[in-house]
Length: 202
Ligand code: GTP
Ligand code: MG
Image 1 (cartoon, rainbow, N blue to C red):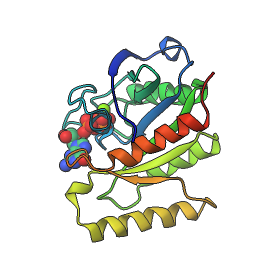
Image 2: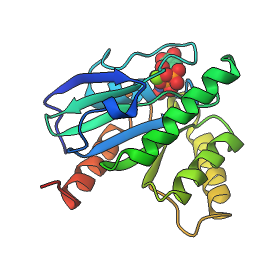
Image 3: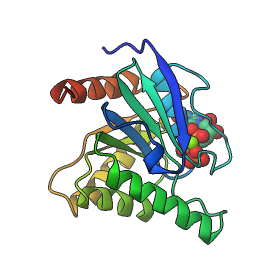
């Protein structure tokens, strides 16, 4: 089990060129606005206020790098699909996110977060397929599982898997989590640990 010995905020910016040098393994969190990206980062690191969270969508609006154990990065990204911003702002966010995925050569894996309470949403499926087409390694995390019953979670999970298998031959790794109950933590941290060990940067 990987221990988190340190977690430090590094930089928040909208300019991909200002991200830290791509010399350490990096893991990003993306998903619809309000799905729980920032809360998951806090839960994984065991730091309550490391990433800023809010009950109103659209809280994270920049690319946020956190250095973990002096050795790898967690990245909190803005959400997509937030209805209440102007077309112009939406365009800027999606350009920023697209250039992040194009240019971050040290990206080991992107966790795409999906609200476990909802049926598969077109916006999530489209985003996942786009990342897949770009060859970006990804894993899925079903969030807010404290809000549903085990039976509903099972149903939700199989609906998503079924949708993915309509277009993919293989399913990406899938984790279930609750930031509230702190569940899913060790499985996700183990996955990160293994990914780093399998492909260490020399
Ligand atoms: P943006 O930055 O706006 O894109 O949102 P985000 O995806 O970072 O979501 P954030 O972590 O800010 O959480 C949004 C809301 O959902 C907050 O009110 C959180 O407390 C709540 N939340 C996040 N994760 C969980 C969870 O696992 N369980 C429950 N019950 N609430 C959660
Ligand atoms: Mg956020």
